[in-house]
Length: 137
Image 1 (cartoon, one colour):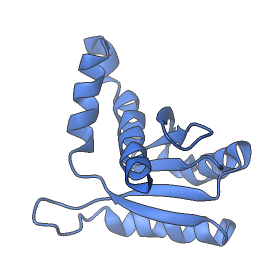
Image 2: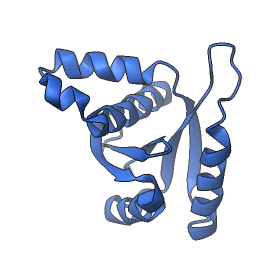
Image 3: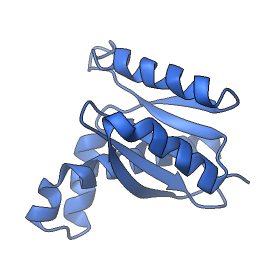
Image 4: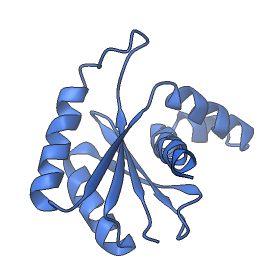
C-alpha cells in the first residue's frame, strides 16, 4: 500500500504529515514556508511514492469556508498542474490546532517547543491525516 501525505496549509507555513507503510498511523513530518510548500510536497510525493494527498478544508463553526480556502484552492490547482494523477482528499480541519496543542502538552513538549508554530502545524497535519486514515478502515 502506498503512503499518504497530509497538508495543513497556512499563509506563512505549511505542515506536512505522512502515513506509515500500512496506511494506518499518521506521523508529523516537517514544516515548510508557504512559498516553497508545493516544491516540498512534490519532493515528498516522489520520496514516499505517494499518489494520495489529504488537504485540510478550512471552515468556521457555521460550516462556511474561511477566506484562506481561496489560497488552498490555488495551491491545489498548482499541484494538479504539476502532478495531474494525484488523488486529493479534503478533510475538515476544524479544531485540529486545539487538538494539536493538547497533544504537544500531553507529549511533554516544553513551553518553548509549544511556542514554535511549526510543531503545531505539522502536528495538525498529522491529525488531519489520522482522521482520514481512521475513516478509510
